[in-house]
Image (cartoon, rainbow, N blue to C red; front, side, top):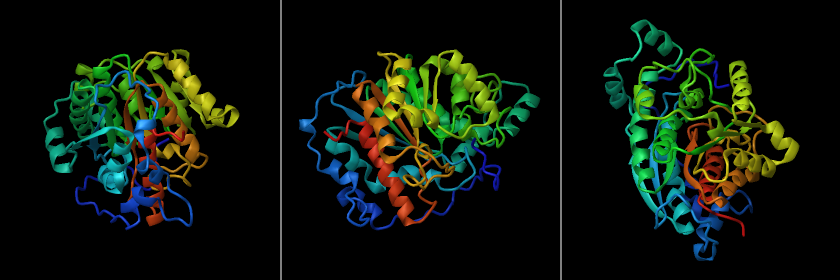
Length: 385
């Protein structure tokens, strides 16, 4: 469920105010958060000697191992200001310092242009593939779809180029609508891709089932090309260029907030081979068993993409995000997912989305930034031993 009742659609405002980073956040990788005597995990990463690490192989990446950082400052898939500052927020918090001690080269591609002026011009040139009446009806139930679609096409091109070059593609959101472009881009390079979707929400609404019309609740439906997503203005490139993601290529972890239409869709898709787990399964059998089942469902040979929404985590762990839901993954559960996927040697790419440093106080921002950066490090092979 991606509805926020006090706002119904994203404002298109390129001059949204940004909260400045606190002094402690700008030095996260130096010594942790400074919260009492608690040692920050990123301090451990900075002191890391990658020469001692076992080589997991990274089967689908070129040598030397390179992380391509692609910023996707998208805010138009949801109604809250601030998600567009996510890429810059994470870079300033110490992204490079979380990556390079692990033995990776750091290739920052900058941000894909997703400002209102650029996207409005792109969206105005879109000629819908459906009738005008159909396009208007669909667009009314998918807010800002032309702009979101145009942004995702740009992101698709950027991610496709980096994946084709054999680089690990790290896409920084931005709201979760950007996963249409990031997953599609990696899928173009790796058609057999398996997608592990870690989120409190299934993001599998169509314009017909969405109660809010917010497009950050629709990316999986678009990638699966579910009925009701065809002819969506702005997404003609997806129909024309990108193969449909099959249910057996998707595994969900951490779900706990679903719409009725999503429940019905997920029950049907499970019968078609999709792995669907909720926090109930995490509680019942533990995160290790859930991740093993997800990987078994995807098979032993697929390249893997991890699409990680920080709202999958409990709000006590990552409070600076827009759709908080109690009862989420703990600090260790959240990191274990990333660690386990890295250990397969088949992880090719990561989305890190819905980080919004404008929400909450400085302590909230610091907690969320540290968690987000440590998820990146865990996905790139950081380990306790």
